[in-house]
Length: 469
Image (cartoon, rainbow, N blue to C red; front, side):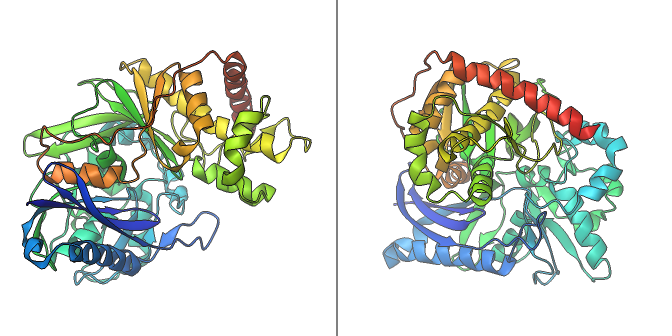
């Protein structure tokens, strides 16, 4: 039997999974990793710990095969957290922490480049933002400019270098998240690199998602696909998309839909879906910074114990929650601004923990709906496929169906990124099993919810205007 290996390196854990050639999961191993916040605007991880967790998970999952079968793993696909960057030496030694997407240390440079924001958006498909890699890479270069043979880049480039024994390369999907990739050439933009004061020779070579990325050194397995985690998750069910949009609810939330050739939504992102020697396909992407992060903010701010244990019941019981202006982590698309501090409306203390919790959940859906409405203006969407930890909340799924007017299917697949990476590594076969899902949530009339959505938009706009005046 032939096997496929998938490595999914995420914010909180590294996963290694084995699939058969038909896409059926056979085994999996998970190794947790840490995340530190040395300051309010910082998010760091230990590159050595990340690398060790990847190697450990791979060794463990391969050990589950009988020894005579271990040589039958014909390809490996890798997905990694996007926008995470670091610096390392030519010999492979990390010279910095891995700096995550939530880290905003590059914000001062971003503000200084506002005059170039339009040109950067046109070339890269991304709005000028410190959440992406370029400003953090600039910060690292300034810190380590005297270091000989300095290498800078996304986490995927570091992992490829270490796992395959050499080379300085990265796939197009992770490269795009650096905000330095010209979408027309699929190579680094010399102009944008110059604006961020980044020497091109410190950056990895750009290669297609599906490509010969080297050999997994410890196990002699060809690495044939490398991709960002959300991009890979889009491919978890092979070609079985139709006119569905995919929403992943993690620390942040992402909504992805197929992008028609020539279509563009300036307020949202153009995201590379996949590339190979023949070209590239694209997705429309909307982002919400405060999803799970907003609920964590609520836990920390309001000292609510066992929030997730209570949420299913609260979502059923609470009928008239307040509004929550969800600017946790800043406003993502379609606003792309920091925004005022998070706040409840009305700003009194009479609301109960249950009411506040439901308000935060609804705010996540309101932000998603803003993005969805813009997508629907360009691309037909007939259903929503929901994944991620928060998708387990029935009340959230039903509210999203009611608000959007679309059927919501919960795709309870925590391995979507790994499954998509395996499909890409296998060469995108036509036969690839869907994971199935829970019974779909059908939209129901919910005039109060839609009224709260309209009020949310009005209050958010007013608060932003006051904050920026």
